Amino acid sequence: MKKILTTTLLILAGFISVFASGHIVSIITTTNVNCFGMCDGSATAIASGGIGPYAYAWTGPSGYTSANATATNMCAGTYTVTATDSSDMSIATANVTINQPAQLTVTVNSNGMSCGNCNGTATAVASGGIPPYSYLWNTFNGDMFNPFQNNLCAGTYNLTVTDNYGCNNTGMVTISNSPGFILSITTTPATCDSMNGSACVNIVTG
Image (cartoon, rainbow, N blue to C red):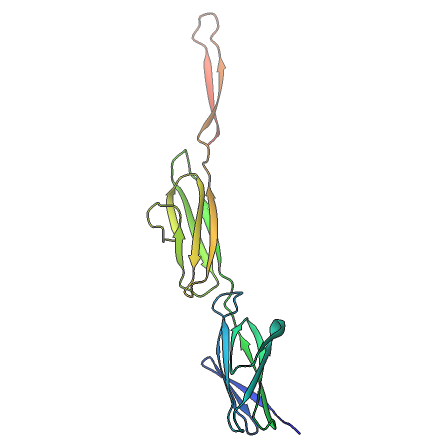
């Protein structure tokens, strides 16, 4: 008859240790996912106290399985590892959670041109991922690596934001050209060669 051992999780400084109440003790170290939505996490289980060698069986989200002490290609989620010694009489199980950072997003705020001048501006604001962030614009105006861009002419501009782990996302902004002054002129002709004509100028837009 197999002996099922209970476990207690202790989380300290990124390490999860699993203490079994019997012969086998599994110590699990974890590496979280680097980028949102990726599956590059890993976890290692080390069994001791029983009769080696040990067999490991991992299960997790979306049918994930692994038979190695170190499980790799793990997405974010909760996984269970079962360690069995060679006598097949001692079994320990433990759970571990692989985390992921928030999704990297970028928002671009802009001001359009005025009076036909190339004086538009754009400011990129990144969030999520793992700071610090780096920026790369396709503007060729001044510093392409600055989140703030100025002296922009009318057109569409793209940028790529990259976080500290190399995760990236893209943004886009369109700078428009606001119209200049549009005038409305109303005239009254002079009568009988008199100097009584008039002209009224109204600014419609601008």
